[in-house]
Each structure stands twice: as structure tokens, then as C-alpha cells.
Image 1 (cartoon, rainbow, N blue to C red):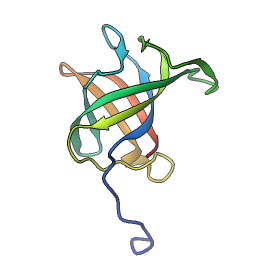
Image 2 (cartoon, rainbow, N blue to C red; image 1 turned 90 degrees about the vertical axis):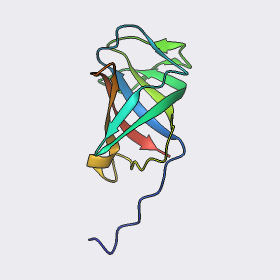
Image 3 (tube, rainbow, N blue to C red; image 1 turned 180 degrees about the vertical axis):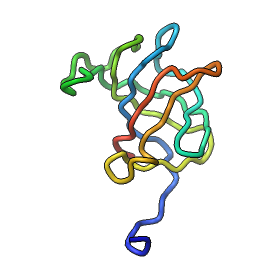
Image 4 (cartoon, one colour; image 1 turned 45 degrees about the vertical axis):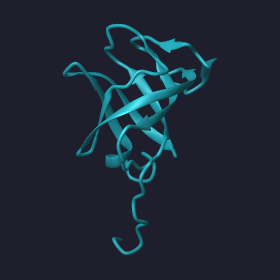
Length: 115
């Protein structure tokens, strides 16, 4: 198993499905919270919110929304502020999931979809 695995690479940007669980305001492009992914804790910038999607079906509700509110699911482009290794949830689940933290509380969670 170990010999067949491809070495993990640094992600310059990545696409992720993010579910806003408990943010007091709205999440919009430019927001830079800390992402906890496996053992890393690195600030990542929401550079673009591509889609607002239905949590249950995955169908697109709105393209290029201005922001996402508590309870919304979205497809976003994130950019780490420091070198960070993340893998897609499909390839390796423990490294593909992350929590979005702000002011010492979890405000959203997500799964990495692609580089």
C-alpha cells in the first residue's frame, strides 16, 4: 500500500465543499479563517464562492453568490497563506476533511473536492 501511494503535494489553491454551520455573519470572498485539516492549522482565504448548493442533493441553487449564511452549503476556491498539503476526500478521507475555525469556535466544515 505505502509503495503504491503517490507523494502528497502542496496545494496552492483548492476547491472545497463548505457548509456554514455557525458563523455569526456571512462568509464572502476575502474571508480568511483558520482551517484545521488533520494536524495542520493554517489560515486560508476564500478567494471565490462558485456555487451555492443543496446540502442533500448537491444540486446548484445559485451561481457566483455574493456570500453564504448559516445553514448554506457551497463550492468554494480556497488559498492557503502558508504551504499546506490537503488531498481530496475521495482519495484519502482524513486529509480531505477540514474544519473552519474563527474566534476559537468552529464556524463551518468542508471536504476538499479538487486542486
